[in-house]
Length: 442
Image (cartoon, one colour):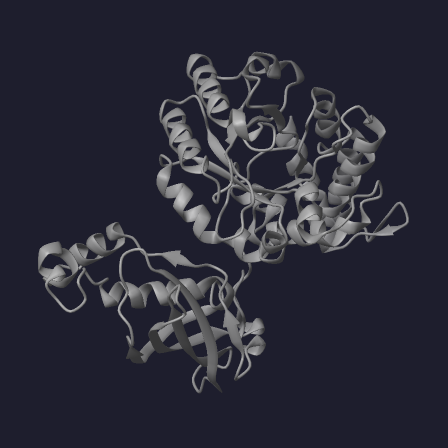
């Protein structure tokens, strides 16, 4: 859950919502026609050109719905029982195609529910602004909110989730990166048996070779799919000139069945994920890279937006915040921990940072063990030798499985201590998680 419970809300609290949204012509036309609105100011270009606005207006009901939707992640996701009403709705400025909307919300009023002691009533004021910081909409929304004590049980996460919804989490213990400029390596990937291959068009390809690398990757994947469970292409970031062409190429490969998904680097806004998904065929997988200061700082809403997996990129993060990389990695421990926590809360597969010293097996082992202890599900691999190590570390050992089985057996017979350690409910759940992970890896 990413929202706030009733007790966490304070009158006067102002939330600046992280997700923004650029309104498109498709948004306006589709919403207007779906709601049977025949007003020409939304649909008729020639008519609208003759009005004082000189162009079509975005349907105000779409704007209102967007404003409320942009507030959900940080405010009411999973913490609202029901919306009770809306009022004081104003549209001070028009919205046009291409406007980018951001939203802030202020808590105006809080009161206990007279009939439902496990809930409280909150009044929010949403204010929306365009890219020129002009207010385009404001409204007040009343919601019946959960209190901590009355909240429904949280949905299962990570290994526990795998027990109730098998296959929902991606199995990515050791994805192997392959440079996009060397597609000839793809037939060799299966030798190291990674769970997935990430063909890299971003960092592994110099600027002057981007177009050529993309063509080579398309040709290679069209002619033969790598013999691995999952195949991805890491595209270039949203703010580069190569991004759109990368996305289009990947969409074609996914549609042809030779690619499973896309890796989105420098993931910083949930809208980037939504736009990417809209450009890809249904069912395409997306792995987001949290590797900038903003991406790590906003990791919770970014994970809540629903990528299929995320990875922490330590090198780019350190560069972005002005840090210095050290062998011990203390400089990225906080960011690393924040990313894995956000992923756990959202039920998203989390991949740990790369170890760039590809020939230093001990450094990789130590770093991978640390990542596993933090809660990561797998680790980025840059060399085939790293793949096998990651598989071992992120797969429970025989000793771990035996201990987990003993814990469950002890709990079933009412034994409160095993090997000198207490056995209670949390240890049983941990043991069950180990067995699930072992079963996935069998």
